[in-house]
Length: 103
Image (cartoon, rainbow, N blue to C red; front, top):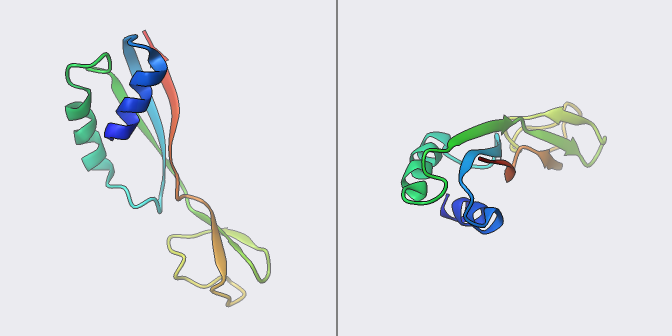
């Protein structure tokens, strides 16, 4: 969260911030509750203090390298419908700063 706050501070040039929106993938390995708590701690005393943190969860999708099927997944350890375990995550692993709203 410190890196997110530092990035927002650099890009907003000291302006007051009303909203920070993050896109977090279902398989990103991020504890959203811990992230929310850290946001309050990391923004205290900065132009982001009191701003809203909006987190949008991104569902995970995988593409099978054998049959090229794209389907939702909750784990890359699960097989594709064709039986192959050779799958690539195409969405759901990201943690991305999507939007910042300045006052």
